[in-house]
Length: 135
Image (cartoon, rainbow, N blue to C red; front, side, top):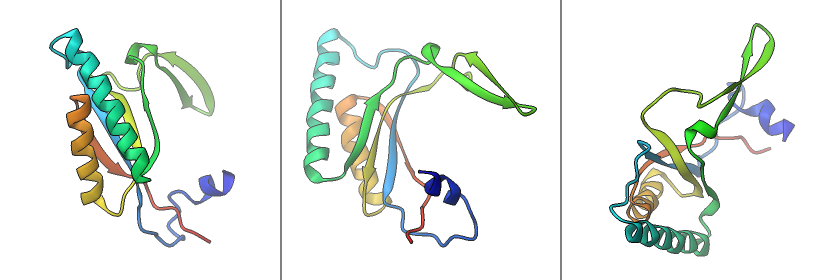
């Protein structure tokens, strides 16, 4: 793990093709579901989407997050560490969950994000991870 940390963002290392993408589900803190039945249907649809993603071999990891008011932040200030309650940024929108997938390119990642957005009934942002050179 330390080797990976040592290489991230180093300009002296050659770039590799990016194959992992973060698909993050955003919402504004209000429920995207019109009814409780719609919520249960979204959970079922998301489960089906997760199974499809796993069966495709593109799944790396996924998870839902608790509300932002459960967050803690560790900040480094003047060489000292401090812990604070609440989200890192004050914002109307927050990340409610995410998938990490492997995809050939951004177009494939976007296609998976479209399916995920329909399943979970939320907005999905797609961002590639920085490349980590192979030895």
